[in-house]
Length: 155
Image 1 (cartoon, helix red, strand yellow):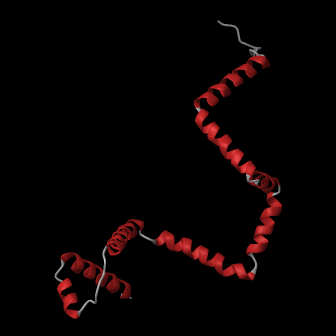
Image 2 (cartoon, helix red, strand yellow):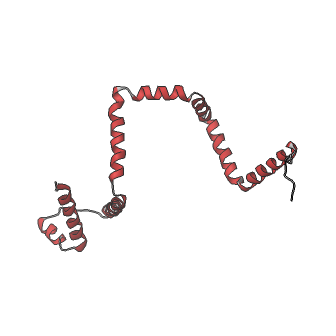
């Protein structure tokens, strides 16, 4: 039978070898992400020139004091209504059917472009309105508007 192992000697890697591997790993990452790093440096330079970097640095270092000051300001009576409205706005946004809203927004944008491109001249008579109802696009729009008003009026 084999003899039981009682001592395990771990292989120690010298610190210089670990440091060299780490440097090679960092150099490879810098090389792979050169463009992103250069953009990051440009962003940092712009933030530094506008003195925003100093402000952000101070904000991070003194975040507890800054948070206390922000909360003290938000608790003032003049900010109560806007904060409450902001909360309600987020709740409303959560209930909206975005796909349906997108469809209507696209249609409204198209209608605004059409209206801006047309040159309205003269007055529209009752007969002109009745004739316009024969136009399928106008009829479809009026029907959609009536359905919208009907849906909005339902209890």
